[in-house]
Image (cartoon, rainbow, N blue to C red):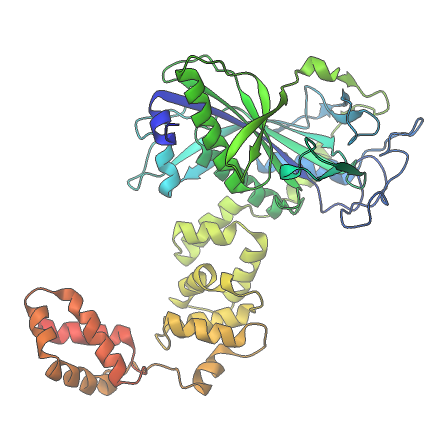
Length: 511
C-alpha cells in the first residue's frame, strides 16, 4: 500500500468521531439507584430497572443531566431546553431489555465546536497547500513552524445508558468470533454515558488523535469522568471515507469500532485511509460497514455491515417524560465549570513565561496543574519557569514527590547550584520521603561552585596545558570548548559550575 503522505496528495480523508464517555464520578446509574462501580463482583449492582424486568420504571439521574450540560457548555454547544429520551432497539446479550435508552433527534447539547491546535510532526500529515478547514469555509493559516489551528464542529452530545460488559475467552483479540465462552457482567449496564458526535471536519489521523486527547482533558477538568481509555470509560468510534481532491460529494464511510487508545485511533485511521485508497485506485468498491482494529496485526477487519437508523426502530420512551431545562438549572451548571485547559494554558504562558508546549502539558491534567500551582508557592524569578521545566522533564519519572520538593529542586537549578544530572540523583534520593532536596545536596557535597574567583585558576590551568585544543578553537573549531569544559570539571572534581566554566573559557579564548 501507499504511504499516508502519498495517499493524501490525491485523496482527501473525511473523518468524524463518536466519543462515548462514562460519567464515572457519579454515585449511581442513569435510571436507578444501583451503585456505580465496575470493581465489584460480577452482577452484584443490578436491579429490575437496569435488568429490564417487566413493570420496572426508570427515574433519570439529575446529576448526570448536570454533567452533560457542563460538557456542552465547555464545548461551546447550544443547550436545548426541550428534549426527550427514545428507545433504540437491538438484540444482543449486553442489554437485557433489548433496547437502549438514548436521546432522539434533539439532544441536550447541539452544534458546538472546539479549536484544535496541530503542531510538530503531526501537522505535516495535512498537505501544506490545503488551506480550508473541514467546514469548507474557514481558512487555515500556518505559522512559521508549520503548526495550524483547525475548528472542529460538534454536531451533538446526547445522553444514554451504557451496555453490560461482555468478556470473550478462548478467541483471538478478545472478540466473540472464535471464542470458547462468553460472559456478561450487568454491573456496567445502565451506567450514565454521554456520546459526542463530531461533524466530518477532521482531515488527518493526527487531528483525530488530538481531538480525542483534548476532549479527555476537558472532561477530566470538569470532573465528570476519569476518561480512562484503558478501562473503557472513554471509547471512540471513527468514521472514515475518501474522496478525490476537489470533490464535494462524500464517499462511502467505514466505521472503526471501540478504539481504546490514542495510538490505536491514529493507526487504525491511517491504515483505513491507505486501504480505502488502494481499493478505489484498483477499481473496487468501499462498503458501508463496521470494522475492527487488530493492533497485533496492524490491520482492520470487517465485523458486520453497518446498521441504519431504521434498523433500530427508534421511538419515544413512554416511561420517561420530556425534559424542560430551566435557565436557572443551566446557569447553575455554568457556574460549576472550572478554568478549562485552553484558558489555563494561556494563563501559564502569559503569567509565567512558559513555552506553549510545556504550558499545554501542565494545563491538560487537573491533578498535574494543581501540583504545579502548589509547587509555585513562594517561588520567584527564573525559578518559576524552572518549576515548569522540572515538572515536564524530570518529575514524570517519579511517583511520590511533594510540590515543595519540586520547588526546591527548581530553585537549586535556577541558581546553578546543581546540574540536571545531579537533579536526577537528588530526586532519586527524596522520592517517597519528606527529605529536603537542598539538604541532600549539602549532605553529599554536590553544590556547585560558581564564584569566578574560585574558578578562574582552574580555567587558566586547563588553557595552559591544553594548547592543541586552544589552537583548534582559534582555527575555528568552536566545539572543542566542550572538551575544555570537561577538563575544568575534572580538575574541580565536579564541583565547578559547567555553565560558568563555558562562559569563562569562551571569554578568554575570544580575548
